[in-house]
Length: 468
Image (spheres, helix red, strand yellow):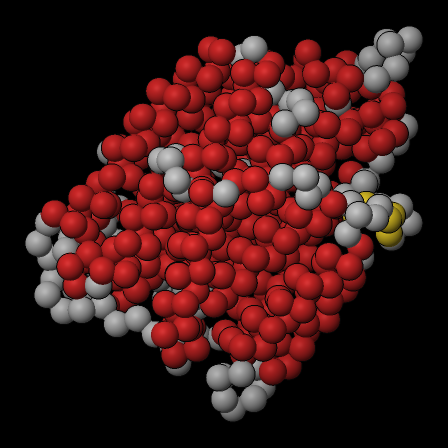
C-alpha cells in the first residue's frame, strides 16, 4: 500500500530536515508530503488489492476513509504555524510523529488481519501519547499524557486478549475467516467468540471516546496543546470508527443480534453523558471534549443499525465532523494566543473559556462567521454538512426500526444546540477585548476552505454519493 510507504519515508525525511538551521521549510514540506500521499491514495480507485501477505485490503471505502484522515491532517498541519514561530518547539519531530501516526491510522482503516489492526492501533496510540505530552513545561500536558498512556495501555491489553480468544475459537486472525466461522449456522459458536468480541470492542470503543470508556477524554483534550487536540479528536476517531465498521460488517454480521443491543445501549449512554455534561463546562476545550464524546454516540447509532446506508452515513458524518472540529480548534488557537481575557487556573495556567470569544465577531467578522458555521454544523443545523451527517445516521436507525434510539438522539441533539450556541452568543452579543485578532493570509485561506466545504456539503450533500 503506497500511502503507508510514502508516509513512513516522508516522516523520516522530516526528521532529517529538522537538522537544518531554518525551520521555515518544515511546514510547506509537510503539507506537500500530505498532498502527494493524498493524490497517490486514489491511484487504485475502483480496484481492490491485497497487500503485505493479504493483511491489508484497499477498496473505495478504505480510500475514502484514508482521504478523510489525510485531509484532516493537512488542515491541522496548515493551522500549526505557531509551532514554527515557537523557539522552544521541535516542529520536525512533531510533524514526523504526525506522519508516522497516519501510518497507524491507515492500517486501522484497511486491515484484513487482526494483527495488522493491533499494529495500527499501537502506532497511532504511541504517537498520540507523545504529542499529548509534547508541552513538557506544562503540568496539565504531562498529566494528560500520563493518564492517556496508562489507560490506553490497559485497554490495549484487553483488546489483544480479545484477539487471542477469537483466534482460539476460530483458528484465524483474518476478519474474513472469522466472519465465515461466525456466519456458519451449523457450527455452534463458542463462548470464546462472544467474550473475544466484547473485549475487542472495549479496546476500540476506548479509542473513539465512547462511554463508559470516555473518562480520559476531557483531561487529555484539555491538557494537550490545542493543535494536537484537533488532530486526535478527528484522525483518531475517524480511524477508530473505520476499524469498528470493518470488524462488525465483515466478521460479525452473522451474529448481529448479539451485539447490536450492546452498541445501541452504549450509544444512548454516550449521547446522554456527552451532551448533558457539556452543558456545564466553562472551558471551550472541555466542552469540545464532551462534544466529541457525544459525536461518538451518533456514529455508534450507525454501527448499531448496521445496514445498507451505514457505510455512506459514517463516511459523510466523519468528514463533516472533522472539518467543523478542526476549524473550531483553529480559531480557538488564535484567540487563546492573542487575547488576554483567559481565566487563570489555580495552577497558574491559562485555560480557554467561553469569555475568550466575547465580541469576536465585531473585532474579526470572518473568524466569527467561520466559528458560527462550525458550531452550526456540529449542532446539526440545516444548510451545513453536520445536518446531513445526522440525517444519514438517523436514517439508518429508522431503517432498522430502532425508534427508541432515534428519540434519544433527537433529544440530545436539542441539548447540544444549547452549548454550541453559547459560543455564538458570546461572539455576537457580548462585549469583549477591543484589540483585533491578527490572522495570517494562509491561515485565513485554510479556514475559508473549511467553511466552503462545510456549507458546500450542506447545500449539495449528494456530491459524495455513489463514490464508494
